[in-house]
Length: 412
Image (cartoon, rainbow, N blue to C red; front, side):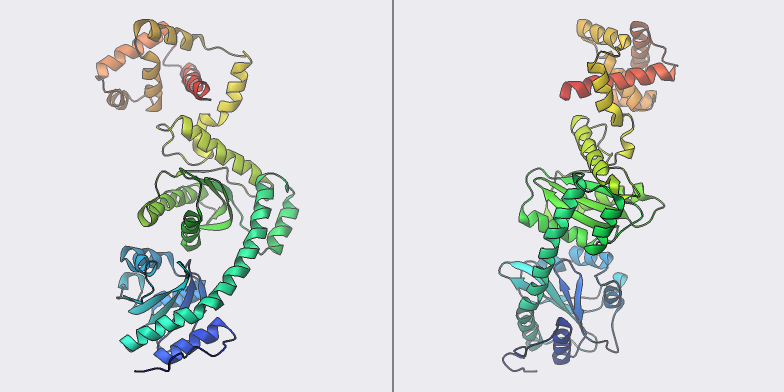
């Protein structure tokens, strides 16, 4: 099959009309997406389409399971590194039939994709060349969409910072701004922070945005960058287990950044989960508190991401202030610390690890790399020297908190 030199010279009123033109020339269904796999345009319905294309059209974005499969098969990495069309074989488990894809480039950046579904025919070499011409012709249309989107995002980010810093706190005013800026609302929300090892570059911000735009685990309402922090207002998909959903998303986000973009050492947290928007600043401060605690107690909090799951660590700043005012002293801890220093023992650490492991003798002995009998002897000495009843939960909790607080104070 041969084509005239440039079949896309004509002016097209819309990207939908452009998609129809490609479809007419190639005799196959066409979809056009932005760089984050959100649907921009698609050709008129044909007799045949596969489940993946149908789902994309219905939800206006490519299903996350399809994106994940395309990454695993190496399709998306290939599209991000070449201007040549890429043939995709059937991936039946996600409802994807044979198709060909090509990237839409602006200078050295991919700004979108064109997908041609091989319904009744296999695209020839000439067809592939036509698809490349279509990608070049689509550039300006897609750029116009990007420019409008960027201007809106600047206004939205300024609004988000006002929320994070408490400059807008009235719930009704916030809801009015959400409606005016066409930001979706949700019954529950939390502020999440992803802290990177260094300042977030434009490239990393695009990678983060890509994952956020393609995820279907949570609803992303707002996001912004503060040096090495990526901050977002997010809502769980359901109200049944919001804590679990946000935890799973944070774990998934870290995994995808590592596997797809080779970015490691991300520290993550989220604040309280609230129903009304005047609590956005509070949730943000709580997320920052989680990161501060994780910095000081990395081992004990390695699997903790939420403010709700901090437990006693939530109260450390308040307790530290009380302690500095001289309002309480734990004589048992002072005695144990003095004994450890004089005799080069580690009774304080032993008690801390014992409580960390829910008073389980076997797990504590394993963590300390000592015999269970040795642990029993140490616990007996702790009770004697500290004059503490290890069967009294109140005394044990008080000692445990004061041990943690002493470590927190030393690092503060």
